[in-house]
Length: 103
Image (cartoon, rainbow, N blue to C red; front, side):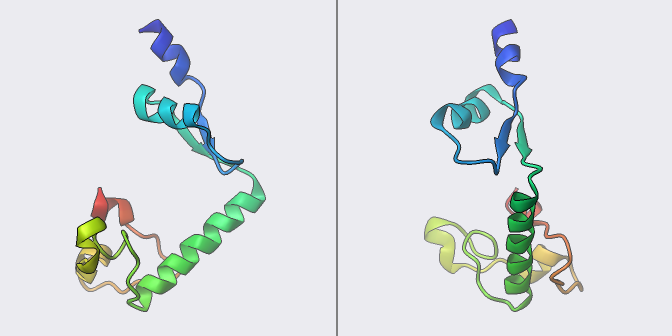
């Protein structure tokens, strides 16, 4: 147990470069914590991606794995009410509950 705790102390940081297999396995098998990089360039890329996703969803553009199912289910669109909540319309500035939908 002490060895496992020691391995989990170091967070795997996303956004500072490619992740190697050891980092991926540390998260998947040892439960290593994950952190997002604080670098300004990474944060800006993340924000641009979030904004593009929100705009696509607001325009009712299918986004694989976000507004559709995965794999064989990719042709099935998820219900907009489930994605955004009943009576809500997505705005490019609003937070998206993607993890709630695909949980």
